[in-house]
Image (cartoon, rainbow, N blue to C red; front, side, top):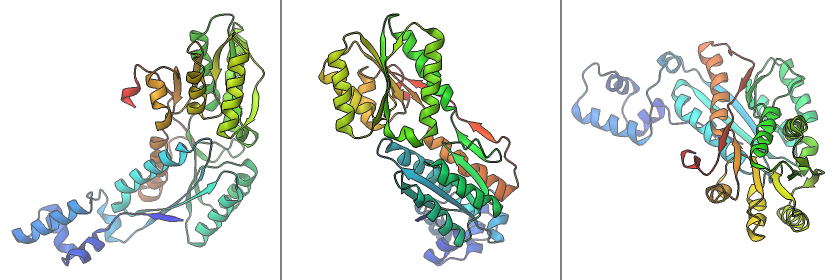
Length: 349
């Protein structure tokens, strides 16, 4: 477990040997302070990245607002943790001087019970507000029941839990994202084309992947102009994904599109380049560093993008605003916008 916080004024005062009262005088430009002291204070504030507090009453009353973030790490989407951590660290940087402190714990997606253990540990430390990104519905059901009993504040990040209508949610509409991916491919492919859909093994426990696949299949059936081949389920390891995709590319000259749900667009793009199948259109989700070059050279034709960094920041801010300022969450479902990234606009992301 990691605690994220920034240096407080009390800590800066102790570091430079100048009272907090004097530091306040410098911040507010009131009272007599020598030029030398003012210079020392300003240099320290810059060094420790201090952002002036927008709610000084919290500091004066020594209020602390503790939020627990419990998320996961996944082999098939290893960028998830990286982007989410950027967002929660941004929230800490902005609100730490208002009293915000975050405890962060992440577990292996293949060990979902680790999330329950992390929740119990944070509850024991007195945390009553949580941002949760989960991987297993059964485990999350038990967690939510416990947190509801204790009247904790909860925001679900990136994955909703439809059975618990009281939970706030920050993330995308996954079924609509699948429909959007289908619409993109339908505009790219010939009427007699064939589409391959490889799906990660995590589909078995991941409702978001199932929702994306449903949205994609529903849109394809509505149009009826392109043939969707039997779904390839159970893919996880890089070698298996590459082997399966390469085999289909060699066997099916009619194959004209791939809709990726393995979340390893880099592996699939590599297979396309190795076999020189530039005729096959490839569409998937999310932008991470390993695929950028493939988007730039149009091996990957389009990705449907969601800003996980911004979503994580928003989830923390929703809780913090309610805890600190008494602001009630305006909406239980805070849907993030979906964007389409292609060669022509990737420089903006």
